[in-house]
Length: 441
Image: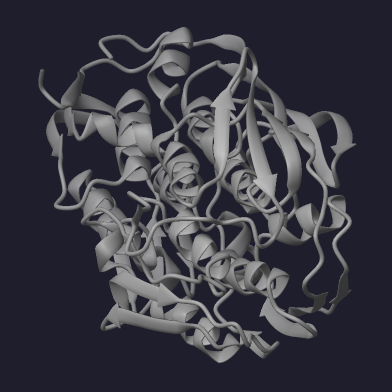
């Protein structure tokens, strides 16, 4: 079977209600935290993607038992010192940077050396941003010039650190937070604004954490060596998965969509703020709080008079995984949109900023790049004809799904490769997009 899809028709008007699968960031964090809890945790609506399944396999190799029951996963933890495993094991994180970086934080007290590996894409990503602070805790770490494979041997004499996270990476911040669980004393973190799921989960689980929020940075004080009890958690819908359907609806004709039970954490809703500034019409309904996370239904409809944006830098971290589809809206907007300081996009599963520029140029959209800033000259009359092939050297689930949205809204005859890449984060993508009327998937 060919690992590609062909799209030859725009999607027709739709008016639907959908639900997307569980949030990937929260799914991985809940698995890792359940592995450190005492007792049996129950996780409902766990995302069953490759990244999350690799998280379950990882804790299993570390001696933590789990099982899937009728409508939840049960994970049996033995506390913060509960990992037990054979010498020289290998943990395979697959494509997941979140899993790979965060689990290293839980291994700084590893009693036997182990090796962290990943797929070809993950092996190209920078791990020095987490191995360097973990060495300060006292862990012994060897890497391939800051990349995978990473060998780690923990220390019996861990020491708390003062850490400045200046990238705006929730993964780096979370790695240090998880390391603090194993460390006596108080670990102090000054972090540039980024996703806050880990600290909210710490609060929910009753862990001793103090947070002081400032304009550009957050300050954390974490007291280590505290066990915590098992927990139950129902994972809400993933706004990153929603993003493809938000943009699909905005760029389609005469369409409306309601997406139910989505995590609308402010550290994740940058796409909503950006698109509404571009004259989209996205609203929240039925807002409620669950385990310190805000949940809501999202309502969106088609918009024709889209306008360009000079995107505020402070929205970058809360939209970092959604810029690919935001660029599609900019391509259809009136005027020139400017996006700055997006170098972090090239640190993802593939060099997404570079790929986005090539993609936009391929479909006839003028783009200028200056360092990590880009300017997209929109064309409200963009309507593609002819043949397009989307294939790149490094599989990336978000690049694939972005290409599908472009094909379904801009027109043209498309061959889009690497359809199995969606299994990384969103296996239900085809099922949902078919329910909206897309054909030949």
